[in-house]
Amino acid sequence: GSLTATKAAAACAAPLPPHAPLAVLSKVELRVSCKHLLDRDTLNKSDPCVLLLMQSQGQWMEVDRSEVIKSNLNPVFAKIFMVDYYFEEVQKLRFEVYDSHGHAGVGTHDDDFLGGMECTVGQIVAQKRVTKPLFLKYGKFAGKSTITVISEEISGNNGYVELAFRAKKLDDKDLFSKSDPFLEIYRIDDDRSEQLVYRTEVVKNNLSPIWEPFKVSLNSLCSCEEKRKLRCVVWDYDSRGKHDFIGEFFTTFEEMQKAMGENKVQWDCMNPKYKIKKRNYKNSGVVVLLDLKIHRVYSFLDYIMGGCQIHFTVAIDFTASNGDPRNSCSLHYINPYQPNEYLKALVAVGEICQDYDSDKKFSALGFGARIPPKYEVSHDFAINFNPDNDECEGIQGVVESYQSCLPKIQLYGPTNVAPIISKVARVAADEERTKEASQYFILLILTDGVVTDMADTREAIVRASYLPMSIIIVGVGNADFTDMQILDGDDGILRSPKGEPVLRDIVQFVPFREFKNASPTALAKCVLAEVPKQVVEYYSYKAFPPRCPRPETPDSNLSSPQ
Image (cartoon, rainbow, N blue to C red; front, side, top):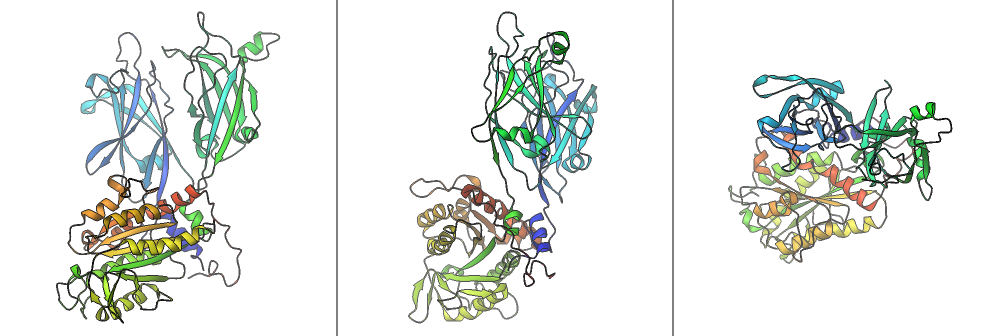
């Protein structure tokens, strides 16, 4: 069966089980404009640029910066700032406006500082549009300067569109050379206000320019409504900021879509003043949409709702470095009164994972021990000793198999992790051949740290990065986990011994000791933080859409409340 619908909704709102309502994460697009900026330049107007800073651990860090707009005290920036919005955190933002001097980038000198403003992501999202005064140092107002930030949440069904425009025979606005045209696209909102969607680069001295193709989200272009009106304007660029109007036309995304395939769509670029004045005025040039491509973007929830099953395999490290299970210092100590380190980690992490596993069956494997009957070393044995079916019922089943297998095996070595990764990869490779988003595999490795077959493990991870699988490594005990940090590609790209990079980052390392006293929620967030993203990345790379949700049948547990 699949996840219950309410569960799926809760699961997607956050990569977390329903009992831990944590990160309701969405992406937010921010657009910035300013009015009445101070004029810092003696000869011409300021050339403003906006920096966006975010507070992290008490420090302001620059996240991104806008383009520089020449000679303009009322700039509307084309730059879209993307911010992750976490429902449960206060995320402080700071916008700083500077007068840029081109050569040295944005100076942070006081004399170039045009003002700053602080607010939180939550405030902007709640109000949709925030206008605040800009302040100089020491809380002084920057004259009448204001900054406006507009936010849009990106909905899950959002895709993006790639557009390629050119123009022909535009009016010439320049005396000694040809016009320097650029194109702007505005979305017209319900309240008739216009929202800048995109501004192309300037093509110098050319009345039939071909602009670079560009991508915009459907959300930003037309609020995902095909019939919403768009206004497109062609200007002749002027370095002093006094751009000359060449002409405009109105269209919709619906109309633009006729440019898919081999077709082109074209519009007359009109100057309303000339239309009134000149008797046989036809147009001020034409604008042609040469090509349009739509890219659909799916979310983790789309795949889960489409019936994608997540299958978990737990692999437990039974090497001698863990210590003799009969000894109370051992990480595998058999203690009748309280769970040992492995059990604590297994239960904490497993309970989070089990909400995603539809049939609640976990494959449970062990490595690095001598096993009966012949006591040969195995690096991938079923801990229930059933070679035909290594699955256990839920986390409780894994716990029971673990406890009953400990006395029967001899902890040994070396710590070879590659065989288990390859074993799960073989199953994932069979799944991949179905060409459907039907099953995704997560391998949960519990280990005390030092890996013997590091080269083979790196090779196995690079191979696995092309398959529908992710690896979560939980470090148990107090060993040196440097090897694990290398495998988790967050600090740099993991490569195979031959130097081949992973296709995508699929390893998440979690040192369990750091979460021993933390809430289960904190652990959950860390363990599963990357999984939804990894699932989406894999299926996007394969271009597999979500499967169709199954039709409701009476016995389907999608309709039954649990």
